[in-house]
Image 1 (spheres, rainbow, N blue to C red):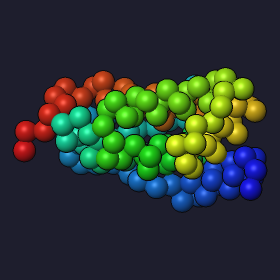
Image 2: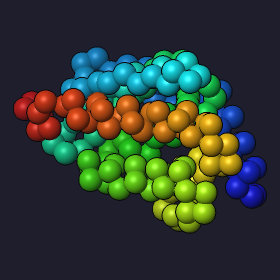
Image 3: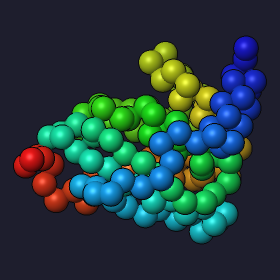
Length: 147
């Protein structure tokens, strides 16, 4: 399967049946993201266990790419530590914004997002969830769970 087929299949699947869709209540942190160019709006809630994102959800409305990217992101980062998430964000950002960037082998299904770089106007759609997650992590007042 080539990258374009993977892109189409994964984006359609995660848009039709988004994973980890909804809100966590209670949540340790949350953030809202908005892409005014196409009207995408996402809300990310998360729970932290020390430096690890123990659980997260997203909700909102947007185009197929923003919803699929949020779904893929949530699956990919659940259970990861902040520094692992920052590394993954860097890889995704490079893949989305540099047309000739190599696609790291460790991306798994996230590699499908590389198909977006053929459509520069859609990069903001694919990166919205990631920026919203970063904002939620920054908003977390106490990264150490006290329970």
